[in-house]
Length: 132
Image (tube, rainbow, N blue to C red; front, side):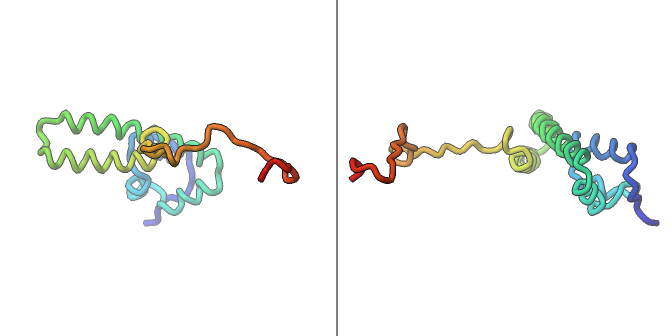
């Protein structure tokens, strides 16, 4: 049986809902009633509105996944090492998928200040005789 390729409002709503719940696109597209992964990527390439909606849904999904880390950590039924793997996996993914909000913050200054940007910039004209 062929997979659906029609971009219906119902299919789009389900994709966006599942993305915003932290489910990866590959898993969504693995369901038989859903379009193939390749079809959805083509839709994103061809439809700017859908691309923006799916990007927004993915962003919401990272917040869902962050909340899920708390749920996993609080679950007393899970083995601690299993919790660690589950949480670490989610944290790494959300840090990549939503780096602006969850990515590692990098301090670009050196401890001795030698790599700090200058506080003033001197602009010299090409014919300035005082510029030795």
